[in-house]
Image 1 (cartoon, helix red, strand yellow):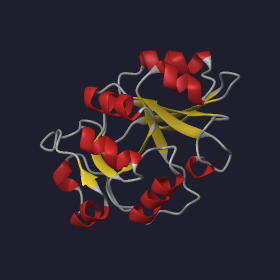
Image 2 (tube, helix red, strand yellow):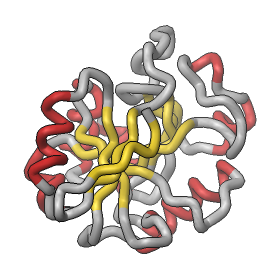
Image 3 (cartoon, helix red, strand yellow):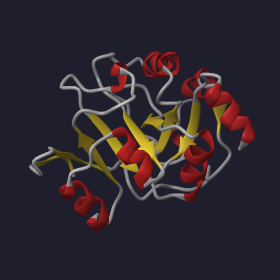
Image 4 (cartoon, helix red, strand yellow):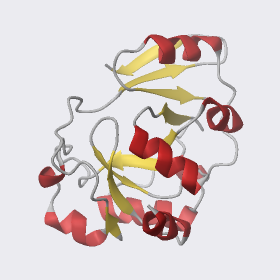
Length: 182
């Protein structure tokens, strides 16, 4: 774990298991690391990425959380990413064109521990090239992607995710909602 934290703090990128698929991650506050991920994925810079947080407090440090978002988080049976308006303290490169950001309050122990030790939100984007299928297990990740990141986490490499991604729901400050991905 300490090795992973050092890599992230020095602007590195990692492959890691999330509560859904395998992801490519970095310190979400480090713009150089964020740009590395865009390059690795061959992803257009105008496409936003989501971030993971480990606690309600960190979530509230980044965004004002509407009451409806708390209800969705509490009631959702599968991992859910909420898209919030007006985030604070995040590089603009992570944000959608309208200035919003997708954030998932993570529930898996490994990711919670990782984000707690890093003490910063973590970028989470699928461990594939843009347009390719998302990896449900480590062996689904292309060797080219593995070579492009700074470290591939050993945790849960044999595990197959039961989710091909999270639900994505936009919640406005007035509690309106829109399901972007079920």
